[in-house]
Each structure stands twice: as structure tokens, then as C-alpha cells.
Length: 141
Ligand SMILES: [Zn+2]
Image 1 (cartoon, rainbow, N blue to C red):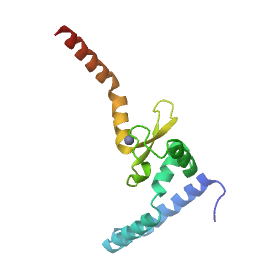
Image 2: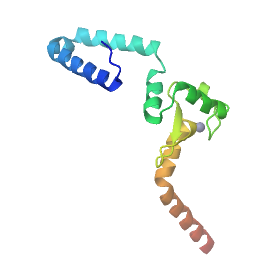
Image 3: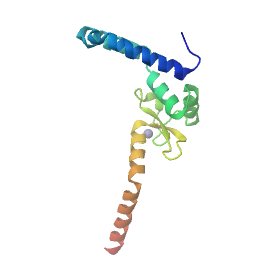
């Protein structure tokens, strides 16, 4: 029986599944069941290729698929840094970029640019210091 409160529904589902797993411990460990479950998961993932990215964006950033499309449209469907066509990327390679301090969504990037931007943000001071030292050394020689 569905609950109106989603948290309550989740809690009840969790309790039910824990009891089911306890009752079916041996079945769960059998290789036949595990293979069957793996195949069912694969079929489900094939039917729902965007499920995890949509759920993740909803949970992490409060973005619905229409919001993501709006961001993509505002960037002409291109990575905000390197301008690669976001639709040409393999699944899960178009990323939502957000400010780590405020949590605010800044735009969409390809995975490559998103990883490099994160690295750059983590190492900005060290890079700045390195380049400053290089400039000092260069002017001395
Ligand atoms: Zn890019």
C-alpha cells in the first residue's frame, strides 16, 4: 500500500527488504540466483539508460531533466570550456559543474573538463606559487 509520505514509503520498503533478505539468505547466495539477478539488472539498465544520471542530478542539484536540457540549450549543447558537442559524448560523460562552496550549478562540462577543473581548483595555490617562482627565476637569469 503506497504511502503519501515518500520517506515513510522508503522506510517501509527498506524494512520489508531486510526481512526478505533474512528469510531468503541461502537463495541470495546461490550462483543461479545471483546470475539471474545480474541479467535482470542488465536488462533494466538497458531499458533505463539515463535513470542513474537523472536520479543523481535530481538528488545532488535538485535538477529535473527539463532543467538539464535548459542548461544544455543555453550552452548551445556544448561543454562550457572546450565546446565539444555534449550529445556526441558517451553516456554519463556530460557533467553538471557546481561551485563546491555554494553548491550552485555553474553549467555543464564534458567529463574531461570537469575533472581538470576540479583538479585545478584543488591545486590552484600550488600552481600559482609555482608560476610566481618561475617568473622570479626567469627575471633573475
Ligand atoms: Zn570540455
